[in-house]
Image (cartoon, rainbow, N blue to C red; front, side, top):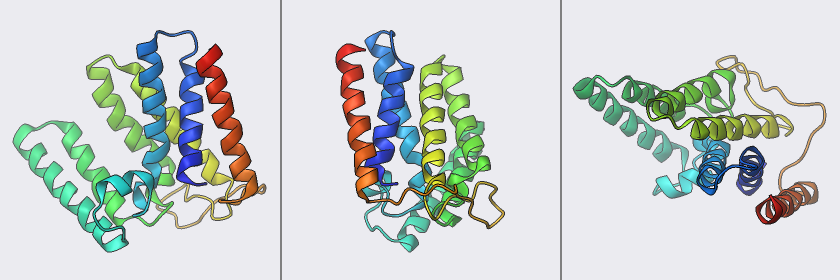
Length: 192
């Protein structure tokens, strides 16, 4: 799936989860679900989030960037003792060493990212962020499960798993899914 379709899925699920809630919760759920729907692609140098983070969009620079983040988070952990920095360092290292649809598209990747978000959000009672993020992330994995390449669900086992029903990216069908999600999101915004 393309980044815009993942974002559309995240926004739509954020709006569904926030139905009947105050505008502040709606915004938090939509933004966190959209972010969660993009995070699994951090292992691809040309992904939507990496387009904002990386100067050069190639695997070497991406790996160096995430290794530098690893070192930075390791220093922050050593100076502060805050476990979140240690976990961020581990996640950065795994992103830097992972191929696309590897670690970040696995059960262990989902659990580690979710745990990190849970540690941060529970400290400040921001459960809506955790709910939106984990839902967006999980739906990203489900969407990519329906592609020909599939996902390495059981990373570090190097086997891609995909659905018998395949949705090819950048096709009329994916564009139709994107349009339907966009229309439904507008419907939820106007009448929800």
